[in-house]
Image (cartoon, rainbow, N blue to C red; front, side):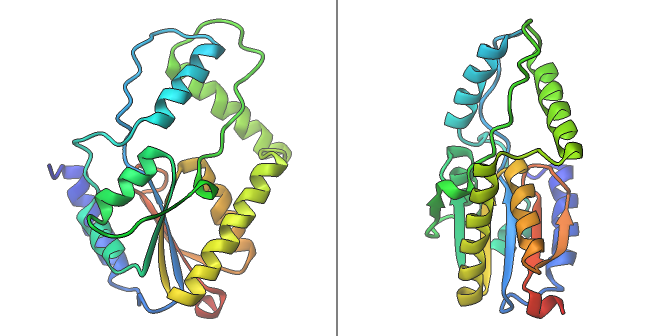
Amino acid sequence: MLTIANAMANQNMSTEFKKQNSLEPRIVLIRHGRSAHVHREGWIDAEGVRRWREAYDAAGVAQEDAPPLALINHVARAHVIVASDLPRATMSAHRLAPGRHIETSSLLRETVLEIPAWLPLRWPLAAWAAFIHLQWGYQVLRGSDTPLEEQQRATAAADWLVARAQREALIAAVTHGVFRRLLGRRLVAKGWRATSRRHSYRVWSAWEYVSPKQAA
């Protein structure tokens, strides 16, 4: 079903994407659609958060959650489509490009943020999410937001996508919110330039990067 939000997203994305030449080396980083998992446990402790993560990672995309038409049309022009091997990302890729071959890789999985050890009590899931992201934000300010292994994974994923884009032009990669930030940083560090970050961090949002040669 086409919602008002999706209709607006279609118009905005269409305007942005029409400006772009799909033959140039480009990488589009797409956040997956809305998860099908519904939390029903109420107030939970840290162990409950871990259980929620396991259930969230095992779930696909909500049946009624449709990607914006402009994004579908843009992904149709991609020469290669890749996705995280977690179900919500893989299912999103298939929803964006029905019938197309989707390459999956654990390199594109979500970054697992640390659960605060200083919260021994039970809280609603939304409160846990706020605490986890506040802790992460504090670590970002201190320059220690990402474990070394996650930094290395983001670098490896960026190298892989850059190599594919240089050979095959337009690459669409369906990944996750936090990891996309890490991946985007690595691309910028390699000289790639963000040309579009429509709809910021929402589901189905797309960040597009052009190669250093095109950015110059």
